[in-house]
Length: 290
Image 1 (tube, rainbow, N blue to C red):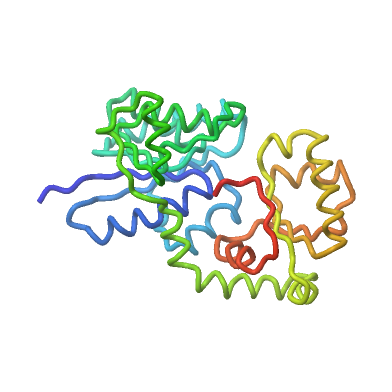
Image 2 (image 1 turned 45 degrees about the vertical axis):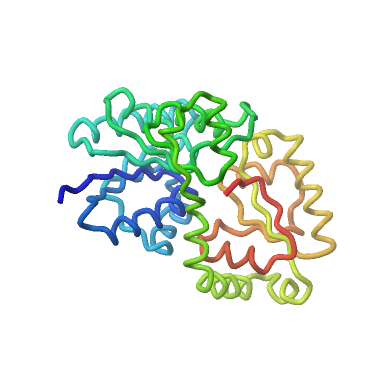
């Protein structure tokens, strides 16, 4: 039986949770698939990359492009330049991209120009807000992809409205839920362990706590909205502990804007720890879709 060679692309943390169950499912059908994993390096911080591979049981990447940070144009261009060489030197049968990050768009563009088929997992999601970089990535990737794998029925409506032929669309469900269900028992334990180590741990265990993440440019790149959000979180901290794993793009701006001593700022956590914290939280405040 002939095998199909799949080249998976992962660039940022949400990608890792999505690609993990796909790789595992294909490994279970080893006679049908050969797999390689490319990590573009879009998330390069240790706590934002390697720990996720360890916790999710992902194999080490076969290729790490190491593109790092930069503007959207710079990052997309670096991924395209590095990824093109991979495809030219050893073209796969299919490239599988997930989500809506810059790496997703960049690798899809390379494949479209080189004639390599692309499958897009999580196709068809829309915010209908073109000021979001992710929305541009979603719309363009879906126009380029040969196979669009959707997480929900409304995605089919979005794609049909944009002129995508029905024969290119398949409903597959939300692969992030596969990862969540598989790892929830371990996550519960990890979250409790992390909470116990935090200074606010005893108070949070007794009174409950709020869990916060912020990373979108509209919220963290401009002084006025970020200052307003921090003020609201400080007010909330008077009622119950506020635990805030701080995204690197956000931490650089916090000290300039407001007093944050009432908020428990911690380093980014692994997947297991964060899901465990979320499970035990009284309220979750986030601008993250994943």
